Amino acid sequence: MTSPIKIKSLTNDWVKHLYKLRESRRFRIVENKVLVVGEKMVTEVSKVVPIVSLGFTGPKAALAAKFRGEKKLVSEEVAEKVTGIQRNEGNHNHH
Picture 1 (cartoon, rainbow, N blue to C red):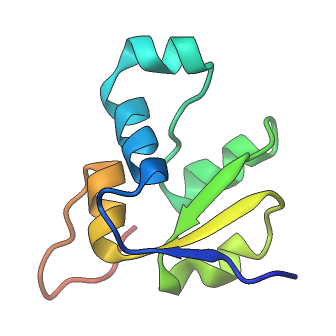
Picture 2: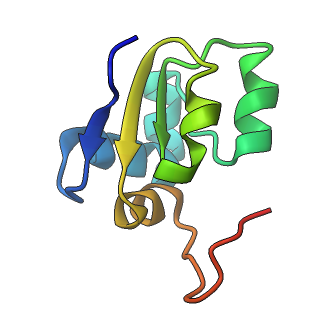
């Protein structure tokens, strides 16, 4: 298995693409793609539709190993920009 691509830049083209998917309904329709966020949702959706590209943070590497397709290890800052979910300082657990 190849190592995932590592992305730390907020200006990366892939990051911009995902951000636009989250922000623009029209763009989602044109691209015929959606952004799925969260371990539970990704797992559920993957049972019905193949995951084309998966971005994950370090703690989710075991989850990422279960999926085929493009995988990208992203920084917390990139994850926050793409998902719009801010991590609470001092609280690194997400449910």
